[in-house]
Image (tube, rainbow, N blue to C red):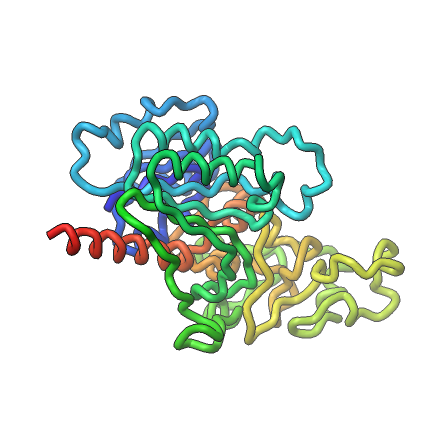
Length: 351
């Protein structure tokens, strides 16, 4: 099976699909650093560095010619999710990124891949429910003859050490398709969820602002003296509620919201969902469980299930953003395995 990664970012979905046994053929993204990272880690794949809105379906024909196709293909898409996130719900409705699923559909319509995989924030499902981008995309899939299923999943139930809720859609032109069963949690054989410490506990200690000399991307952001005092006053899994009065920010004295900011991760439970600012102490519960700093880019990558030899290119801020934007590898792998299982069953039934 051949995989094509639209809005690929650094390649979280591609890595999961590769681990599931699919051949990675093409990545598409307009972010330069993500393109550099993707090319380095998928040297046998092709990459188009460009905006999907300016690409035509025929631009990818050299990589997915309908006339010479010998293997089933899978199109994956994780369109930029910021327009649909909770933080953006009160913004205006003119964000042009909201129609990126429609742009993706141009390619689905032209090449009719056997399978489609989409991952995004839950808000995508509810924005303008009847006429919104997701409902329109489902209607388009139906008209093209796809069976499809979608639901909001918890990433920790698929082996990801994060409390990350995502909307996932899988579709097939070969027959009805069902969601894979969770691998972890209350409805699985593995009741215990994957933990932060299982993911990052093997990495050597570094200080705030330090770069490890031999482990790629094991680098953490520097901290001011005041923020160093704050994280030292925060217990494992704790928050700013642990601080003495002298360390509390003025903006938090009469405000109970955003309780995760400046928090430490727990050790023996999943982390909060990573974001594009996952290496910043002040932007979420991104403090290391035991060391006095925010998590490093490598630790964030481990929490996204990237293997240790997957290297991210770019500045500290860019690599952190790439990791935070990525689809968790193990979750993509579970769905890749499910797609492979579905295709094998289809082949068996056709004999």
